[in-house]
Image (tube, rainbow, N blue to C red; front, top):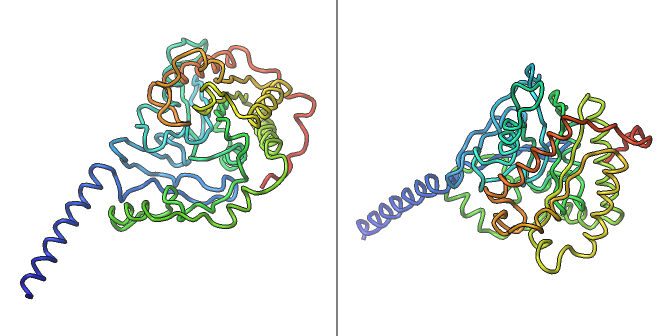
Length: 331
């Protein structure tokens, strides 16, 4: 009887070890991207990480950017673009480091032979589910790294983003702050029922003009970038369902013109990808309902490179007279 029990334990340990090694080698479980809480951004990727998830390389530098280590000072004869965004810019686990949207923009700019530019750097400051207030918080925390152009990439949902917070950290499996002991433990955690904190639901249920608050965050971002000697440009990608026959929902149809009018009033170059994607086979451009595929990153990246080129050759005239209003506390 004892022999049978020991044999069973041995088989179980071997099977567990094989499963552990498989989950680590095949999916990268046991070594997830880690996050840290931040009073300004709510949360950001923990600095100085290098890992592989589902075969895709992920590198996070000392400033929580997705990319290699950088100098805070722009090299001479370099066009530096600070790219801000959410998971569309970040790329998540489904995008290899070599296929990021920011790298597609960088490669697109490198092929445009810009006057006075010897090299191009496109920095990727982003995190899953960030909105305008998170992105403003990042710039207030770290600055613009002497970038001549700050490129903010939004998606339609960002117009309705809630205030920065860290309520998801270590509660939502997608936002851990420490590595699990085992890949098996991470797999089990991802299958357990996720219950959001009550405080998060309270934020989501807050009444008021959420679009207006996010537009105010964009105004403050514009003001901060101008004060740093740079120029802000913006683009917005649509949700995939907005491209289907029914188009955007009623509340999105109301919010979208507000962003267009805001950009025009502030003198911010703005590219709306909705009409552009409506004129092409958009299905191939999406990985899922919101995120871009590798081909989508390439397609959108070239359009963004052209947008940056126009801003570089003909900078905007700056903000409207309202652009220097005091910066209200959005946190």
